[in-house]
Image (cartoon, rainbow over the protein chains, first blue to last red):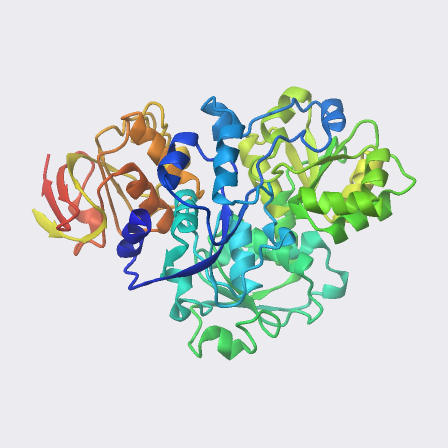
Length: 403
Length: 134
């Protein structure tokens, strides 16, 4: 409680509120975890753990084939020389569901509108604030743990209604959403994040049929180019029945119109590869939904991944289990794809291992993966940004044309 | 020169001011093993931050930052204090986790009243900062 009281005081919180949902860093350093949870009983909040598992946990043979060593970098844990099992033992005692995913909502962690959550991982923070209408800040890793110990959180920032109005209004012009791919939605988010910085956004005039998967691509891109916590969508998200409601009847600080050229510019920033050859294709940042695994399996059925390409697909292990039941995993693996539940975003194993393995170009449909791979690999693994369908074609042919 | 600010993390500290014109993150900007600064600016890159007072506009970056701050403090290579224009939750959590006194919202233009090399005495509980020019 001490940690949370201090944080609350630092940000002028006047009171604490009940927390209902938490998402925990997957690989806490053991000494600090012990300190934060000392004497604590199991948590009352719905707590899940973030993506960061052994990449080879799901598909050891496939991972071996594409050059991924077992137990590769479970982050701070391995570096501190501590066996993960000691950390997981405390997670089990605390009642944290060891989900190893950045999409805990597929494991049932779906905070309700107006409730307070504390989540590790910025893409989930934006989704929970915006799509679920729950309230949470850019909380840090020890903060998440402290909330699970006390089941309370200081009411500050996004936790207060007065701070949840949009300061940036985005409108669109000349975009045909019926032809929008997952990568196009991500490009829209990447463009808007850079304009918004830390401000709340409202997007006007998106189609009513916008799906959770599609919004997830917008949400996960916003805090990559900016530090956005909340993005309303007029007529769709719970706090934006109208534009005026989302703005709290106040004048926006920034008004922006998004056009085709903005989406194209985002593609250019995210494409560092020059030739058409591709030797790695990664899908699953954020982790794939069951719908996406279905799309991958449908497109891959009866085909083979090129022998020059590593095709790497990441999803929450619960979703992978469902995909197994549905026969999707069998199709993807028979075609030569490799499945994982590790992080393929800011901790993509091939960002650091790729150059040594001769990996030169990664085709992907994720702003987050793309942006961080460019930086973490020191531009040694070039990126080709495009739709899931284009990525799968690249996996089959080893070539990537088009946009 | 004595100035008044707002407590973010409790405690007293004194040391030499190190000025970063850009937002600071414990993850990436400091080595938790050596306390050496990794900010790619000629006046900061490679400089030891051990026992220094960091002057910066605000925080930024990964929510794992406080883990690095905690590690640096355990290794006894942490900065002595932080003074910023406006605190941000991740940097504040780093200061609290590592027990580094931190003050924000000085009633003065931070980057005008404090220059690199100035000697700083800060008392976060009272929200006071004393600047002794070099």
